[in-house]
Image 1 (spheres, rainbow over the protein chains, first blue to last red):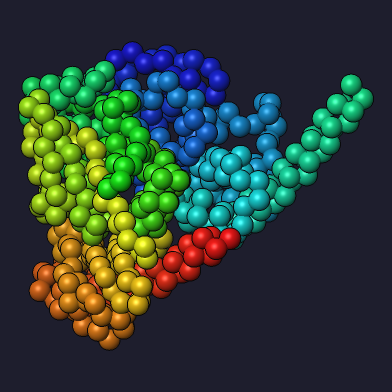
Image 2 (image 1 turned 180 degrees about the vertical axis):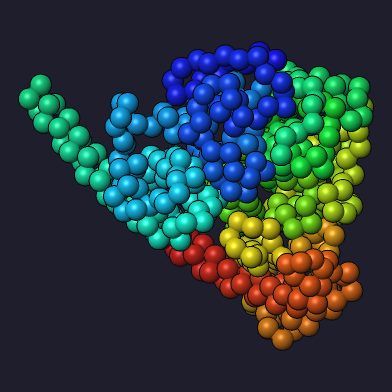
Length: 171
Length: 298
């Protein structure tokens, strides 16, 4: 079956068997191997991607079901090649990753949380990542990373808002 | 963990979907796929054809009338979880939904999909049985309505026949003044399958006596069960009495036993959680009543 998917802002096409999951299509057909193949039956969260901005398992969606959605993978969150976004940066800083296998899923899940909720409590963060397993960190540094990213985003957003307000005054 | 080959079709209407399902008895409807796809990955399910009903507009939406709240089968769990209608008119379901899977699976998983999947530990079927919801099933001959209690037959087994498509669920509204609800669950960790779950709704009369009570227990038997609480009618909410009624109502249920929890453990937890859910529902009813009075005075 021919599919045309909107992945990280680009339209990507492929001719796929219906049984191919979005996860396998991303990795094998579109070369986006940042999305990890973990348990492949919806338990671990390593394959998390954003579907219309909300986290979902790429292994629990066949690629033929995924047309018409805005799909974001870990490759789509950095502002430019070689740069990190705020969440990625915070994960590095707080040692929120060790082996790195769960990290793309964790970062996308955190990204979606912070887009929706700029002031997450510790409980909100734990709830948000409850579907993503990490066997290295014990989660402490991951929660810390997301708290730090939230703090930074608030500062950035406040500055941007102030900037806009100034422009409007001058304009 | 790769599914066996299958054909995929995305019909434009419910009628077309029913025709496709009727034409091939090994075809399966797929909505969110959050339970079906893992079963296919493990080859526990091998449908010849998937009929994708996820985007059918007639299966979407949450509506209400005087008597019930109706949820379209392909309405996503996350939509129901955040719906003001569900929170306002069906608080028991609103309390149960955060226990369904975890946030990413609720983003894709549907209300109807959970009902059709009929996991004995699933929360949405439990609330449906506890409240006596009606389940609409559409096929080429029209719509058949089942009582939730008759719809669930056993583990992953429902009244759905080949060619059937679950189209909507209607939860009854309790129109009494003083109604409260509570939901409790024990599992290995948050978001994992429930060992036992309890869903309760209680109405109190102006003297604070129980005017109506509904209790459902999930994860105990091979399907969600409705516990007979008629003995509580007219009584004041007392832990001892409620505990006795719940024990009497659950002790004959044949409890499941597996690696995670033995049958006797499940029995004990069912009594504990069922009692706690009924008591908390009474407390909730008093609280809501007080809140309503405050608003009325203001």
